[in-house]
Length: 51
Image 1 (tube, one colour):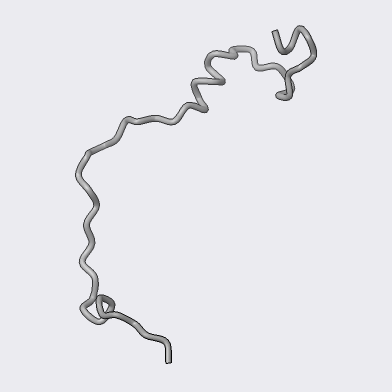
Image 2 (image 1 turned 45 degrees about the vertical axis):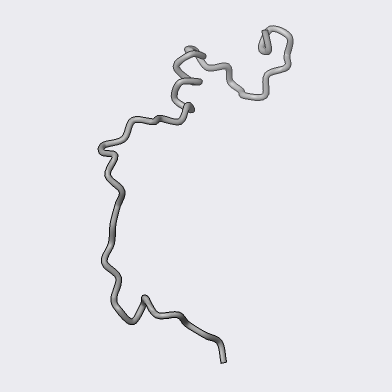
């Protein structure tokens, strides 16, 4: 519809519009669900103040 009525903003027109749209969709496939956890140096864990 958008290309036929000159309303499209993406040029040139993709040959496979469905594949183009699917390539932009956010994927919820994760390698694992475990939360990344990091060990921080003890001195980085203290509260810092501005003097």
